[in-house]
Length: 211
Ligand code: URA
Image 1 (cartoon, helix red, strand yellow):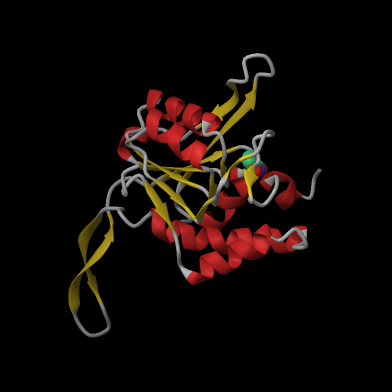
Image 2 (cartoon, rainbow, N blue to C red; image 1 turned 60 degrees about the vertical axis):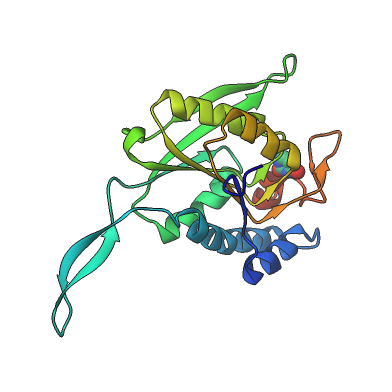
Protein backbone atom coordinates (compact mmCIF):
# COMPACT_ATOMS: atom_id res chain seq x y z
CA UNK A 1 0.00 0.00 0.00
CA UNK A 2 1.53 3.31 -1.03
CA UNK A 3 1.29 6.13 1.51
CA UNK A 4 -0.61 8.26 -1.04
CA UNK A 5 -3.23 5.57 -1.48
CA UNK A 6 -4.60 5.66 2.07
CA UNK A 7 -4.87 8.69 4.35
CA UNK A 8 -6.08 8.18 7.91
CA UNK A 9 -7.30 11.44 9.39
CA UNK A 10 -5.86 11.34 12.88
CA UNK A 11 -7.11 14.77 13.99
CA UNK A 12 -8.24 14.52 17.63
CA UNK A 13 -11.71 15.88 16.87
CA UNK A 14 -12.23 13.24 14.18
CA UNK A 15 -11.05 10.45 16.47
CA UNK A 16 -13.19 11.66 19.37
CA UNK A 17 -16.33 11.90 17.26
CA UNK A 18 -15.66 8.51 15.69
CA UNK A 19 -15.47 6.90 19.14
CA UNK A 20 -18.88 8.35 20.00
CA UNK A 21 -20.27 7.04 16.71
CA UNK A 22 -18.92 3.54 17.36
CA UNK A 23 -20.56 3.44 20.80
CA UNK A 24 -23.78 1.43 20.50
CA UNK A 25 -25.47 3.60 23.13
CA UNK A 26 -25.28 6.67 20.86
CA UNK A 27 -28.80 7.56 19.69
CA UNK A 28 -29.88 7.90 16.05
CA UNK A 29 -30.05 11.69 16.46
CA UNK A 30 -26.61 11.76 18.04
CA UNK A 31 -25.15 9.51 15.34
CA UNK A 32 -26.55 11.75 12.60
CA UNK A 33 -25.22 14.91 14.21
CA UNK A 34 -21.78 13.38 14.67
CA UNK A 35 -21.73 12.12 11.10
CA UNK A 36 -22.50 15.62 9.83
CA UNK A 37 -19.76 17.11 12.00
CA UNK A 38 -17.14 14.50 11.12
CA UNK A 39 -17.92 14.76 7.41
CA UNK A 40 -16.95 18.46 7.49
CA UNK A 41 -13.57 17.53 8.92
CA UNK A 42 -13.03 14.69 6.45
CA UNK A 43 -14.09 16.95 3.56
CA UNK A 44 -11.35 19.37 4.57
CA UNK A 45 -8.79 16.58 4.14
CA UNK A 46 -10.13 15.06 0.92
CA UNK A 47 -10.25 18.44 -0.86
CA UNK A 48 -6.69 19.38 0.09
CA UNK A 49 -5.48 19.09 -3.51
CA UNK A 50 -8.14 21.19 -5.22
CA UNK A 51 -6.48 23.56 -7.67
CA UNK A 52 -6.35 27.29 -6.97
CA UNK A 53 -6.01 30.24 -9.30
CA UNK A 54 -5.47 33.92 -8.58
CA UNK A 55 -8.17 36.56 -8.93
CA UNK A 56 -8.13 40.29 -8.36
CA UNK A 57 -10.27 41.67 -5.54
CA UNK A 58 -10.43 44.89 -3.58
CA UNK A 59 -10.23 44.74 0.18
CA UNK A 60 -11.38 47.87 2.08
CA UNK A 61 -7.70 48.92 1.99
CA UNK A 62 -6.33 48.02 -1.44
CA UNK A 63 -6.45 45.80 -4.49
CA UNK A 64 -4.88 42.38 -4.17
CA UNK A 65 -4.40 39.08 -5.95
CA UNK A 66 -6.08 36.35 -3.94
CA UNK A 67 -6.61 32.61 -4.44
CA UNK A 68 -9.93 31.06 -5.47
CA UNK A 69 -10.82 27.54 -6.56
CA UNK A 70 -10.03 26.86 -10.20
CA UNK A 71 -11.97 24.94 -12.80
CA UNK A 72 -15.28 23.19 -12.77
CA UNK A 73 -17.21 22.58 -9.58
CA UNK A 74 -16.29 19.31 -7.96
CA UNK A 75 -18.63 16.34 -8.10
CA UNK A 76 -19.75 14.45 -5.01
CA UNK A 77 -21.03 10.95 -5.70
CA UNK A 78 -23.00 9.24 -2.97
CA UNK A 79 -23.25 5.47 -2.93
CA UNK A 80 -26.81 4.84 -1.77
CA UNK A 81 -28.04 4.83 0.85
CA UNK A 82 -25.45 5.36 3.57
CA UNK A 83 -23.39 7.72 1.41
CA UNK A 84 -26.08 10.35 1.86
CA UNK A 85 -25.12 10.81 5.51
CA UNK A 86 -21.60 11.91 4.55
CA UNK A 87 -22.91 13.88 1.59
CA UNK A 88 -25.14 16.18 3.66
CA UNK A 89 -22.28 17.41 5.81
CA UNK A 90 -19.90 17.93 2.89
CA UNK A 91 -22.52 19.96 1.04
CA UNK A 92 -22.62 22.39 3.94
CA UNK A 93 -18.94 23.07 3.32
CA UNK A 94 -19.07 22.96 -0.49
CA UNK A 95 -22.61 24.05 -1.36
CA UNK A 96 -21.86 24.57 -5.06
CA UNK A 97 -20.65 20.99 -5.61
CA UNK A 98 -22.47 18.94 -8.23
CA UNK A 99 -24.03 15.78 -6.81
CA UNK A 100 -24.58 12.30 -8.20
CA UNK A 101 -26.00 9.06 -6.82
CA UNK A 102 -25.17 5.44 -7.54
CA UNK A 103 -27.34 2.60 -6.20
CA UNK A 104 -25.98 -0.94 -6.11
CA UNK A 105 -27.25 -4.18 -4.65
CA UNK A 106 -25.51 -7.50 -4.24
CA UNK A 107 -26.77 -10.27 -6.51
CA UNK A 108 -27.58 -13.14 -4.12
CA UNK A 109 -26.25 -15.76 -6.57
CA UNK A 110 -23.12 -14.19 -8.01
CA UNK A 111 -22.53 -11.97 -4.91
CA UNK A 112 -21.42 -9.29 -7.36
CA UNK A 113 -22.71 -5.69 -7.17
CA UNK A 114 -25.48 -4.85 -9.63
CA UNK A 115 -26.35 -1.25 -10.43
CA UNK A 116 -30.02 -0.31 -9.96
CA UNK A 117 -29.68 3.48 -10.13
CA UNK A 118 -27.23 6.01 -11.45
CA UNK A 119 -27.49 9.73 -12.05
CA UNK A 120 -24.21 11.64 -12.18
CA UNK A 121 -23.18 15.18 -13.19
CA UNK A 122 -21.99 15.97 -16.73
CA UNK A 123 -18.35 16.60 -17.67
CA UNK A 124 -16.90 14.31 -15.01
CA UNK A 125 -13.61 14.37 -16.92
CA UNK A 126 -13.13 18.03 -15.97
CA UNK A 127 -13.98 17.73 -12.25
CA UNK A 128 -12.49 16.39 -9.08
CA UNK A 129 -14.85 13.53 -8.23
CA UNK A 130 -15.28 12.50 -4.59
CA UNK A 131 -17.09 9.22 -4.00
CA UNK A 132 -18.60 8.97 -0.52
CA UNK A 133 -19.64 5.87 1.39
CA UNK A 134 -19.16 5.61 5.17
CA UNK A 135 -18.03 1.98 5.23
CA UNK A 136 -15.32 0.54 2.95
CA UNK A 137 -15.98 -3.13 3.75
CA UNK A 138 -15.33 -5.66 0.93
CA UNK A 139 -14.70 -2.80 -1.48
CA UNK A 140 -16.81 -4.51 -4.17
CA UNK A 141 -19.49 -1.83 -4.44
CA UNK A 142 -16.94 0.99 -4.19
CA UNK A 143 -14.85 -0.53 -6.97
CA UNK A 144 -17.96 -1.06 -9.12
CA UNK A 145 -19.12 2.54 -8.57
CA UNK A 146 -15.70 3.81 -9.61
CA UNK A 147 -15.75 1.54 -12.71
CA UNK A 148 -18.98 3.26 -13.69
CA UNK A 149 -17.59 6.75 -13.06
CA UNK A 150 -14.49 6.00 -15.12
CA UNK A 151 -16.73 4.74 -17.96
CA UNK A 152 -18.40 8.15 -17.80
CA UNK A 153 -15.06 9.91 -18.10
CA UNK A 154 -14.02 10.60 -14.49
CA UNK A 155 -10.24 10.70 -14.13
CA UNK A 156 -9.49 12.62 -10.94
CA UNK A 157 -11.28 10.51 -8.31
CA UNK A 158 -11.02 10.27 -4.54
CA UNK A 159 -12.84 7.92 -2.17
CA UNK A 160 -14.00 9.18 1.21
CA UNK A 161 -15.21 6.91 3.99
CA UNK A 162 -15.50 6.89 7.75
CA UNK A 163 -14.17 3.38 8.39
CA UNK A 164 -12.17 1.05 6.19
CA UNK A 165 -11.42 -2.66 6.47
CA UNK A 166 -8.03 -3.92 5.22
CA UNK A 167 -9.89 -6.16 2.75
CA UNK A 168 -11.66 -3.15 1.20
CA UNK A 169 -8.49 -1.09 0.99
CA UNK A 170 -6.72 -3.97 -0.77
CA UNK A 171 -9.62 -4.51 -3.20
CA UNK A 172 -9.56 -0.81 -4.08
CA UNK A 173 -5.80 -0.78 -4.41
CA UNK A 174 -5.99 -3.61 -6.93
CA UNK A 175 -8.98 -2.30 -8.87
CA UNK A 176 -8.23 1.44 -8.73
CA UNK A 177 -4.68 2.16 -7.59
CA UNK A 178 -5.06 5.71 -8.92
CA UNK A 179 -7.86 6.52 -6.43
CA UNK A 180 -6.66 7.83 -3.05
CA UNK A 181 -8.74 6.80 -0.03
CA UNK A 182 -9.36 9.12 2.90
CA UNK A 183 -10.78 7.57 6.08
CA UNK A 184 -11.05 8.26 9.80
CA UNK A 185 -9.83 4.75 10.75
CA UNK A 186 -8.54 1.48 9.37
CA UNK A 187 -10.18 -1.28 11.42
CA UNK A 188 -9.06 -4.85 12.05
CA UNK A 189 -11.05 -7.01 9.67
CA UNK A 190 -14.37 -8.07 8.20
CA UNK A 191 -16.48 -10.68 9.98
CA UNK A 192 -18.29 -13.56 8.21
CA UNK A 193 -21.28 -11.31 7.50
CA UNK A 194 -19.18 -8.62 5.84
CA UNK A 195 -19.31 -6.24 8.82
CA UNK A 196 -16.28 -4.21 9.77
CA UNK A 197 -14.85 -5.21 13.20
CA UNK A 198 -14.82 -3.45 15.61
CA UNK A 199 -16.71 -1.06 13.33
CA UNK A 200 -19.91 0.73 14.25
CA UNK A 201 -22.56 -1.67 12.95
CA UNK A 202 -24.71 -0.95 9.92
CA UNK A 203 -24.10 2.69 9.10
CA UNK A 204 -27.38 3.07 7.20
CA UNK A 205 -29.41 1.58 10.05
CA UNK A 206 -27.63 3.72 12.62
CA UNK A 207 -28.18 6.95 10.71
CA UNK A 208 -31.74 6.29 9.60
CA UNK A 209 -32.95 4.42 12.70
CA UNK A 210 -33.86 1.26 10.75
CA UNK A 211 -33.06 -2.34 11.65
N1 URA B 1 -21.68 -1.68 5.84
C1 URA B 1 -22.01 -1.21 7.06
O1 URA B 1 -22.91 -0.41 7.21
N2 URA B 1 -21.30 -1.66 8.13
C2 URA B 1 -20.29 -2.53 8.01
O2 URA B 1 -19.67 -2.88 9.01
C3 URA B 1 -19.96 -3.00 6.72
C4 URA B 1 -20.67 -2.56 5.65
